[in-house]
Length: 423
Image (cartoon, rainbow, N blue to C red):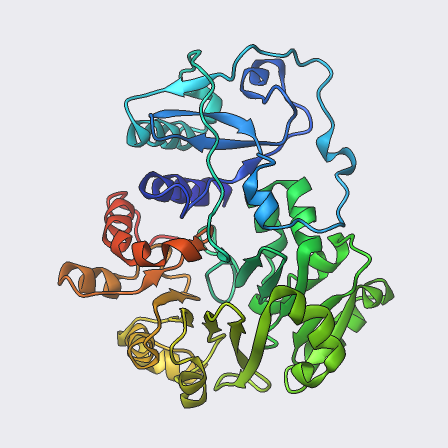
């Protein structure tokens, strides 16, 4: 699964490196022939493609990205940061020189397809490349999983990390969420990020939205209890998983968590949240959508899983970011009705009614590893479409106006591989 998703991410990174950041690579021990690509300061490194056409491995930066988005007090590196004592300090970071980002990614994809690795790309010495800068906005949204039902090698179970300067909220926790955090941040920073999450909001009881809770709670090292908002069955399920998890979270049902003054003061106010509404929707029993409002006058709305729901449309009007499920193409309307999901055309109609500044479609059927054909056809007719979520998509509040314009490029580069629609 990693090879397939890495191919996809490399292609998307070609278009916009900040929108689709590459994952962090970690290894406790490497063979001598691999050491030429190790960071001189340690083994926690990130593979980067730069604007000047170079690529290489560099330390995960302790820069303004970490300063703006606090990692919390918890999380211990343990042995994950252990240095290889056999490594020598190189005078400069080795990088691969190619004729541009497309050339670099093409060689990497070819190497992976043949069973090779990044180190198989020809390496030449060059001056150390510049580090990528962190985000300048006040909030960012990272899509850790964008598929439905069982995870595939392209789309994992639902998970949306909303990061603020002072902490984070996780919307849904599919079974692959913790693994995705480790992949995108590295183990050490993933533990820190996990400690910075003050609230996990679970939309409903289905496994692709809650199965990742056990691993998240197991790895969370912070002494502060996590606020867990969800249906009652989620709490009962966690109780059945053993007594060790109970001390790590405070459970509140959707219907009453915001009426609790302790919850408001302890978990919401530090993030600047002025409203956090759970809206009952049409899916399974005890299913909800979320609408978050902030003191800086922005609003994020997340549909969860649902058929078109008037109450959610009304509550989410004027959203800064609308995140809506679009599980099926319109031709599968019967499937959508039976399984209580939305079609793409229904999601687009809801987007028009909400009049959000930006709409992101997610929770796609696993029959759509890339861009659903219906959306490609709309792009071919030059119709405006929302942003299409992929695992690893990072939305920055300072760049909202840019994202929709990139969708035709994203569709074209993915369609050109010839394996569209083949999970």
